[in-house]
Amino acid sequence: MDKLTNRFTSIEQVTGEYLSSPKQHNKTLAQNLSFEEILQKRQSNASELKFSKHASLRLEERNISLTEDQNARLESGVQKAVEKGIKDSLVMVDSLAFIVNVPNKTVVTAMDQKETPNNIFTNIDGAVIM
Image (cartoon, rainbow, N blue to C red):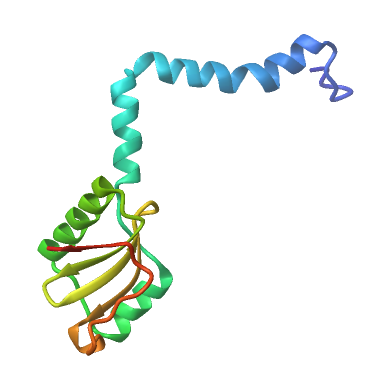
């Protein structure tokens, strides 16, 4: 780049500045990691269970706090739902009920047994009881 005019003097400079860097960077990353390592890294990031804003509010309003064991069982239940191809699942952990959007691994809402006196859940296509 010509520093006086702040312009590129050739197409090679443009290509070198804007087009080559990201590709070369990605190639360098790919050369240092095996396919299996990249896949595991992507899967570990995708496996994290998230709570929607609505679910977080419901947990707070209902004074529900998950123990580490309950959280682990909830994640295990979601993983079982993934394996069975469930899209919207009810996951029961002790007396807590969670509606989970399985493809997004997002808890949509949460309630305890007091909140579900009729024990009726709609808009789900599977249930996992942990």
